[in-house]
Length: 89
Image (cartoon, rainbow, N blue to C red):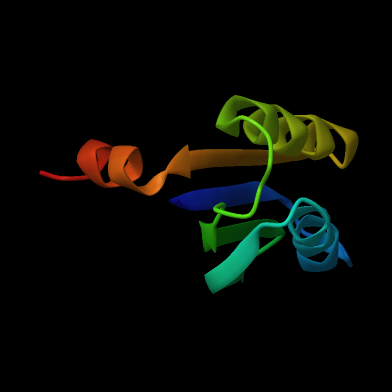
């Protein structure tokens, strides 16, 4: 299953490495990534494949949200179909 991961917060060294490492350790493959820094604000959107993740999707979402709190970032994941439905006009 494909999903969208969003990361938002104050820019600092190592954000991409931190999130990418957590995803890799969870068996989640990054398919595409876009990131930008607007003044001091970091934003990143990733398209990921969660097929190799062995736990429930909600568990992965909680893992990412918890890590986000630990590093003072907002990290969210949504299933691709839900993300697309929410952003369709």
